[in-house]
Image (tube, rainbow, N blue to C red; front, side, top):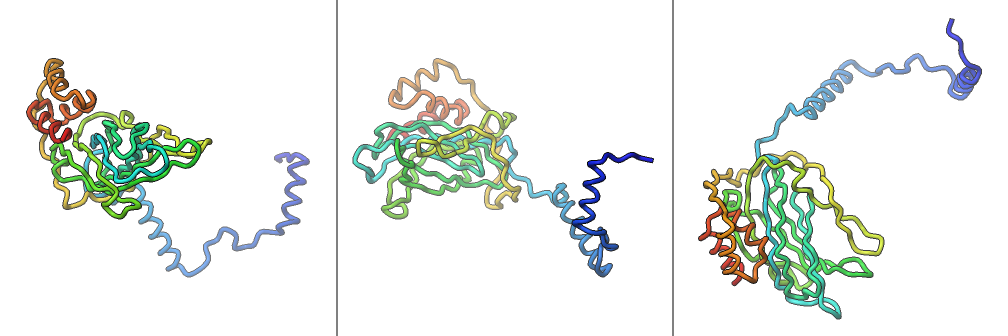
Length: 280
């Protein structure tokens, strides 16, 4: 016979007094058999769905990368008594990326920041916001826009363009922002492209913290987005070639020049054309 400790016996007696004897139908499935079968079929279908029985249509692989160079902005108004300290926040899928702050950038901030964003299946747009960094209050939202990734970018081209900004002045009336976008697919692991989680800081405003965000819900790749064309054969980038381009464009950050050159697969002429458009 199995022995029972006094405390355990007292606990069992207390439970019986409080709850009383268990009913005869305890843990028994009541109701018509048809309802039980329907519940079983629904549970089985849900289990199959969670296990991946319904595979979504194929889209860009998880190693697809959207490189976005946030070059500069031209805003229509400086909010506040002093020159604004703007920075840019991007959201691509469920991941958030930020540029550095341009101190006293005012209405013409420049960042020249290259960000390599993870492009998950089903993601075909970029959400962009410009904030004024504040020391003692919450950072103020200046302007924002929603940009659909051009098909030409997903086909391997490097696109440089100005995009209108929304804000207090109205839709498309807050100014323009200059971006360079390119798309590439490679075996690089996700860890090389960490997004940023934005959390409230103790002294006010928001503080970025690196993290790995959960992938967005799987969705079919939009039918209107053409599959990426085969990438052209990359040319070897030599230090002499890079130095020549840097001397031609001394006002553009060297990291931006290298990024544009790599996005054009080492094609010097295409890189010069892209940089000429950026410097206009």
